[in-house]
Amino acid sequence: MVSDQGQQVGTGSAPTPEGRPVPREGSGAPPVATSAVGAPVVAAAPPAAVGAPVTAAASVVGVRVAGGTVSDDLRAIRVVWKRELIRFSRNRIRIVTSLVQPILFLFVLGTGLSPILSGSDHFNFRTFMFPGVIGMTVLFTAIFSAISIVWDREFGFLREMLVAPVHRSALVLGKCLGGATVATIQGAIMLALAGAVGVPYDPLMLVVLIGEIALAAFALTVFGVLMASRISQIEAFQVVTQMVVLPMFFLSGAIFPTSKLPQWLAVLTKIDPLSYAVDPLRRAVFSQIALSPRLNALLNPGVTWNGWRLPTLLELAMVAVAAGVMLFVAILQFSRTD
Image 1: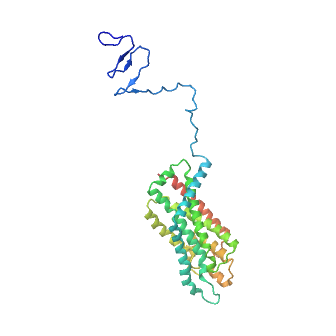
Image 2: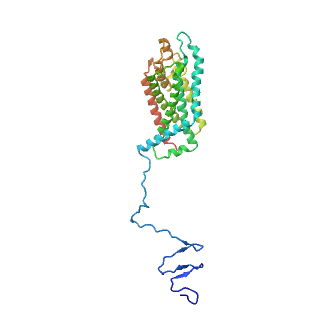
Image 3: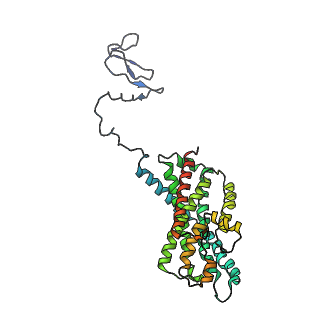
């Protein structure tokens, strides 16, 4: 019904400027909001009352926050270890170049030094250098695998790894295992050259060598990770490693016999931890070669303390203990990383 003033009465609504009725207050109809152009706006549904049953559509799937369990740490170790293998397998230039230097030492330097031992024994000096070159391959590969830590720190990826909900010891262990696996593979590739330097392919000797290579690779990788734990620039890491790695290599007896050294140099070879990793390799190789007692005493004197030659198992145990101590220190260093 419309009155004389043009207003609607009795209908419970009043017209909008666009002609759409808007319910009046008290008319019983729910209010309908309109936008600036007059289109109706659908109001949000009111929240469910407390204690109301939850429908299937609104149910939430339960999830478990990672971290704090052994399975999470093992998964983190596997992921970091696999990352190292993927990076190594996809970098073919690194695989090739890491083998060039040992081959040059073995066939160029070894051939050049062979006339020193020329005589009635007709011993090939490359045979002597073969265990040392394997140790050099493992040393350089293991140490420089830790350079990725400095790279990750410089570009911020290491921070993302350290905030993961796992123990940092799992990250360090995964990194060490990955670098050790890569170094072991490189050392095993060098074993293929045994026949070219007069070393027989004895199955038992190869198994022993691979085990000793794996232990040395793990210890040297831990050493590299320990050095990289507080270095923030790649250039600084390269300088520090060159200052440490080259003396370790030359003092280990890898390329020259240690039987007739001056007293001061003999003491340094006993301090060098790499000496206790190279000597077991040389013992395993020389056990398959027939040498005269004089030549064997000259080329394979071993590591001696006051005239007592250390057994192979004791040398390997010292390498393992050193690896454990360095791993513990490396974990502490990463635990304090900010």
